[in-house]
Image (cartoon, rainbow, N blue to C red; front, side, top):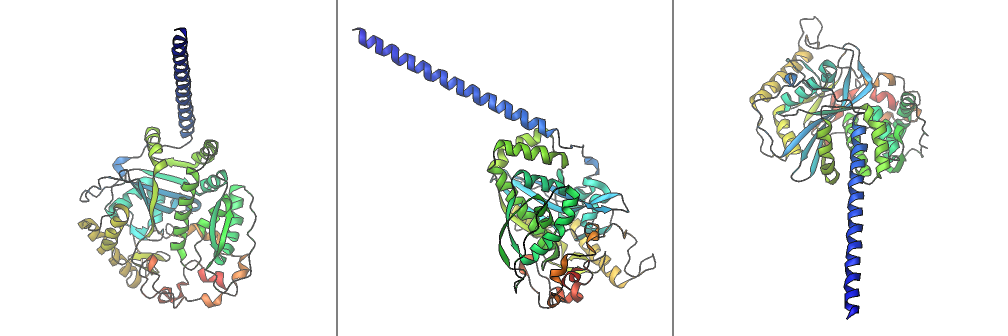
Length: 438
């Protein structure tokens, strides 16, 4: 009779040990979460979080809300692109990030920086100048006003933060063409000087017949990836530049998801001091668990239909702002039937009137093609002024066959170019693009 009693005691003892182990594990998990929370919150202090002046942000009151989505403006600030006339910096990267918490989708749409928009008070200018004129408030207002959006939060990142993030994550594997390799090597020299980081130039293979075709995938460090994102003189010009930037964002996000905590902490330490946002620490912390499981479902350039114009030191003019605003809502919110407001229609009319005035009229300033609302210094390609002397671009000296791009029409992935670059007279004004090809 004593044996069953001892067996029962043993079972109770084992159950007590299991409960104790479970309690210890739960305690360790709780401590781990607390430590993780402390580590993350302490690093969030590194981010500059100025209070956004909401009264300065323009919202088109006619535009309907987009339920289920939250849209953020992401600005990439390249300190090389300082607007001397305003003592400010242009936002040479502008990305709209639409997040659906219901589906876990993130949609990225990058606005080409040379797109002419109403940047405020009826002033038409290249979109990248709005940030220099009035900081994030004016840049956000520009996006809201021209495209019927309701953006209230933003993130600004210095280009040097990209170098730090890539290095902290161990580099990225990126497919490259011969043309990209040549430009990457040239840009890397200046990027290295700016960041104080070394790099090894890519070894160029024998020049292929098609310099735009991808040759292979290359492992790039931070200096090289940043330089890759600055390339804008390949066949697809600034559209290719925007596409490269979105690709890098996608690759960074994917690599971060599969990185260890020490690696992520290192990224935060190196990158956060170069980030500015209107989001509070509480908002950022509440977003982190969700974003881990989210994925980028769409990545696109914008505008959709446009032509190149010689106004504002060479620019991009939308063929129809109304139609493209509808297209943008389809890209960001999957709304295929959006009807833009009267405000957007009015801006569209003024935009084309302003272009015609500058191309064929004469302003009150007395010089053809100059607008009284245009500050010549604000729309310059300040970010590339330092590249007027290509120097190391000797590999491109025999690319004379690219001059004119007469048969490069269509390019449907980037909109209807209506006759291609050749219709723009060789696009010689695009900051010496063809100078790189001899």
